[in-house]
Length: 439
Image (cartoon, rainbow, N blue to C red; front, side, top):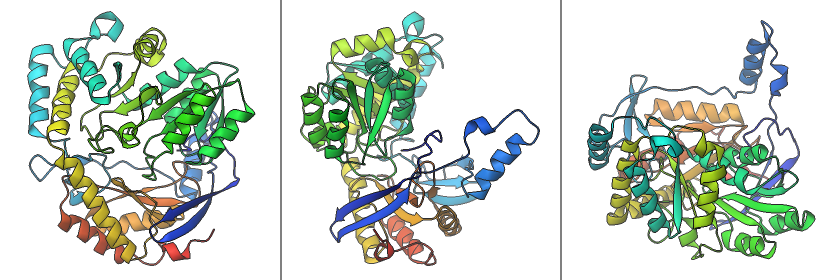
């Protein structure tokens, strides 16, 4: 997503979608925020910066999750003293509180301790890390996989290792911030192509022929839930001899016939998608991330990726827990089938209300509101009704496209989904209907 306030372009962007109900467009603008250099070391500077964020209705707040009232599930949580149904987590398969996964973590902690004590290249790399890397490589079908502490760090590593100064990275306009930041760290320039528009991506590579070394894209876009046009991007990357880096954080475990992600969904080979990034804190319900690729790619990351070399290794108990999670994902396909069925149930009911949905068939189901303050009001009305749904505002999404990002989990019930739709129907008309959106 365009999450870095350094990019202050205010040009309008148009999103065109074709859905089962026909085509429609959404016009928005890339966000502008006060630039960070304005925050000088003066008594009023910080207060002024915060006041400007408030003026734009963009202040973020944290809520404290105090407890989980349902055993082995986080579909319901107690937040700030109120029991609510959580429709905004990324726990797509309902594994975050699975007792087998928690037991695997506890057993490993009793054997190895809570922390790794060092980086992977010193003495921090343990048996559980090695075993998980091998199992992730087998699951995704790549030669090797390399563990990272976060998906952000994995994306920084992949881009900064493959791109260099004087080169160009082609980025989808709605990519996650970590792909943008990885490009900045590499010293390469970036050129952004229209969202999910492979023809525009090819235009970028033509304009920078010989200098464009990487195409980077989300697999499933985190704020929209739609899929990258990966087959065409793979063809273009091969034709222009560019690396294709796919961040499948929201696809691994959910998308594809057996949950192996967007590469499986499109029936692509590892040579067509040579660099795959996945995270472990979403569908797998634990924490961390990985990059999968060829033996040579992974070895180069081990030698050059600063976010791998210069940080303490992920704790072994987390790796052990993820190994158990990976086992459950493969033996219980009903979890993936269930979450997708719940998302489809929601879409059918929401379409009947003429709500403005994004074109997503994944567990990410955004309801587009428009103005940031209207999205916050809608969020608060849902909270009063007992549903936790977060309003997503600029700079995470383009100005004019603030939304309720609704996500589903295999742990939800049909009754909870139906009740959420009923609550959305009671929100005042400040939430635009699809028919009110103009191109």
